[in-house]
Length: 302
Image 1 (cartoon, helix red, strand yellow):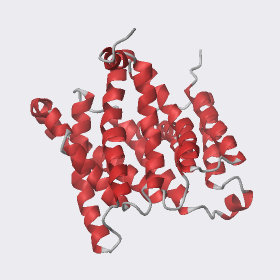
Image 2 (cartoon, one colour):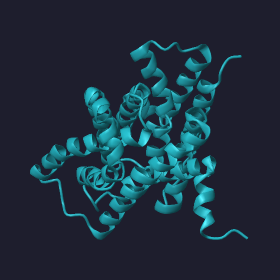
Image 3 (cartoon, helix red, strand yellow):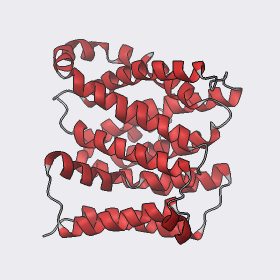
Image 4 (cartoon, helix red, strand yellow):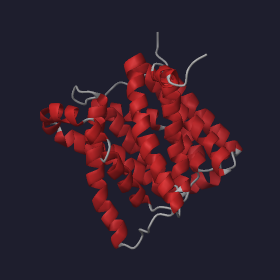
């Protein structure tokens, strides 16, 4: 019989459990974005998220930050862009998108990120795209269009999409760019680099919070809003990063990265279970297209 004390150690040593927990926490962020509507304003949630993260992470990794400060300083522009677009912009757009689209759509659209990564890598570094990859891109994009059009051809032909879906697609493009550029980060522990980007995300989000306050769109969070913020800080922001980096240590980035594809699977399930959202036929079709396109794109020719 396993003792309670040994359970955390067993989890910490199991990459697959850690990756499953990571993707569940990330999927939960889509649900949290919908729950936050009317409970805490988008920029307030984004800014306070990184404020609280920066109240913990820099202290935890202060020695590593001091050790790697010369390298971080030399790469300040890269750190700034990654933190601003990968963290602040992505999360802000997700929380704004939640005002006019469902958590199911947000989750499915996040599944397009690997394909946008493929396109971004081609545009930035001319990384070649093979025939199977091109087919995978096309299939996934079709899934995105099915999601954004709600399976209605008339919406697609008239380009009258729900604003939230468009904001989420833009957010995914930003995160794809972040994913491509982060591969070129200077050599240092992943959590040290994450902490540096979190500090940037915090600093960048504060002026945006000021705009939200100045325009009268900010409001004091409700009790539910504070609980949502607590989850976002502890789950998607801190624990998921610790779990993901540990999993990479155990099985490598390639095998760990595949698990990211679980996010568009978990998010709709959580949206149905927690929010009571309805899973329509077009959702199933879109999810099949998105995941199928990713599977095709990630296949390697012999």
